Image (cartoon, rainbow, N blue to C red; front, side):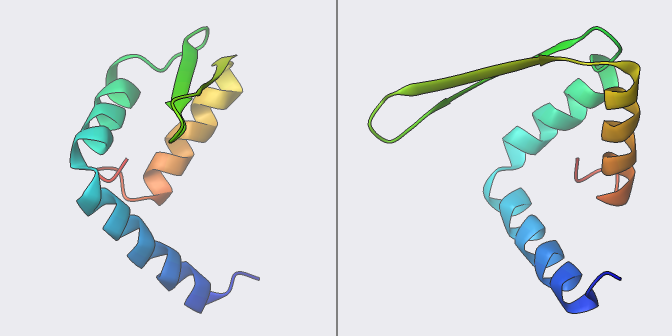
Length: 80
C-alpha cells in the first residue's frame, strides 16, 4: 500500500523541481509529444561539478514508450 503522506511530499518536491526548471520540463513535454516512439534513442549526458561528463543512452522499446506515457499521465500530463 502506498503511503499518502509520502506521495504528498513527493508531489510538493515535484512542484518545486518544476518551478526551478521550467525550460527542462517544457522540453521533456515536447519530446514526449513528438519523438518518443519504438526505436527512439534517449541519449543523456550529465556534467558533474568538476566538469566530468557522465553519459548513458537507451534504445526505447514499445513497452518503454507505454511506460513513459503512463508515467506522464500519473504525473499530471502537463508536468511531464
